[in-house]
Image (cartoon, rainbow, N blue to C red):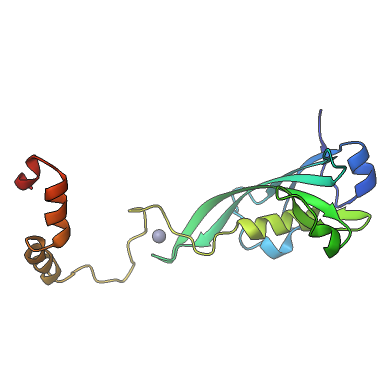
Length: 182
Ligand SMILES: [Zn+2]
């Protein structure tokens, strides 16, 4: 059951017939468009691809991708390390017409004769990238030149509102018992 190293291009018919499995790492040489994003401590993308066909005879490729990327936190603008994983089952079809007839558990991958595994891995990685990245709550870098003296007014305002907040009245009604000690 050992998997072969990840080649660039694979003949679909042969791979499906043999239920071929490929496994490997791609770096910035193979995926130059992600060179700037890959974590320098682990600058490669793990990819597993398994070919086969389902009961209806539909040829598919099951793809698993894992990578570590460094993005910019949208709260503190410092680098944030993100672990990305994706897995998908792609129905291998020669055109749009066949793509529309695929069962719901297969996403179409339009490919004739050959499939480019490097390109496939790049697409999976692109899809897995978050639109915006943040550090976990409370783990942002403090701003380097920001002023920390927030005005005290905000705090006073919120205490004033607490007594008339309709939600605190509601929660007092819902919680029978000791909420008044709040
Ligand atoms: Zn942050």
